[in-house]
Image (cartoon, rainbow, N blue to C red; front, side, top):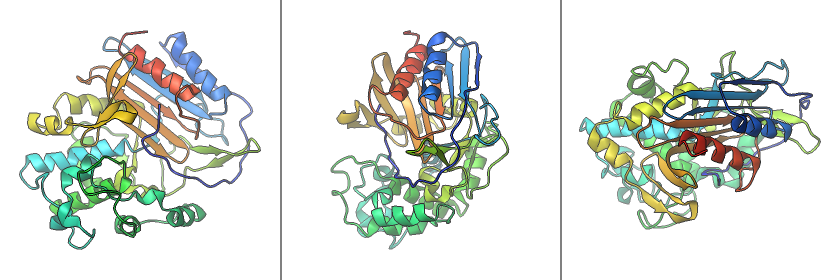
Length: 366
């Protein structure tokens, strides 16, 4: 499976793991074998949770922290990165449903002067990744600065400024191209409409009503004791701990922290219509075809046609963290994979094989 976002990383070194801790709960050998293979290949810790509509199976392998050697838990906190986009799109579509904003509103309408040509870019184009705006994470100078000091805090408008220093990739609506800048802007617009911080909007409109007590939009690098540490592997076999890297380098594009059960609960509620009215959910699931990725991108959610059937959801990548959250259209079947080490995600890789295994088990095909 190809990544929907790639982030370059720097290298520092810590001690390599000396062993593997494995636990499983009601899972079959396929899932367990897949995770243990990932850990043997150098992943420090991984969790997979599969709900096939009849039973929930959770498998964990590896450790949450190389220093303490604490085994990774089935409900530990994790940076879910770009899965954040589905949360942000949900908040925006709630505001649309309340008549406070329209998908046809322009960036200029809510953020005057922030984006050259913003009077031609609509909110819908931000959410479905057709704005043409340059992805600030692809700016090599910004990457060098961010990675030289990963604890530095970034304001959303700083990230936007990095993006708009580049010319647009294409005219708004002409093509599809994934850009984290789109969601940084969507978050700023939600704040402009409501006068409230995005983290509070997520809490008041999503995590509070759904009682997702382990899910929040992080605004600084502080984490709770049960947070899984993220790692970058080094050439000498050591690891860089990325746990304290600032989430503000992602912001509205990827700063949510959550757990496998909370992520599954969120998508189930979303697809069941608990968070959006029917029109809002229909808008979210109206997609732009992305042929090269065998799927389509909607408003903060995408579908992929897998060998075992169509799934909906999102993936997320932050240095040291990888999350996959897939569901069937009803949301009653779900599969969540969280891996706490950068690794090969290309087709045929161990990671890709693990994703295929969990998806097919979720859909009852294996």
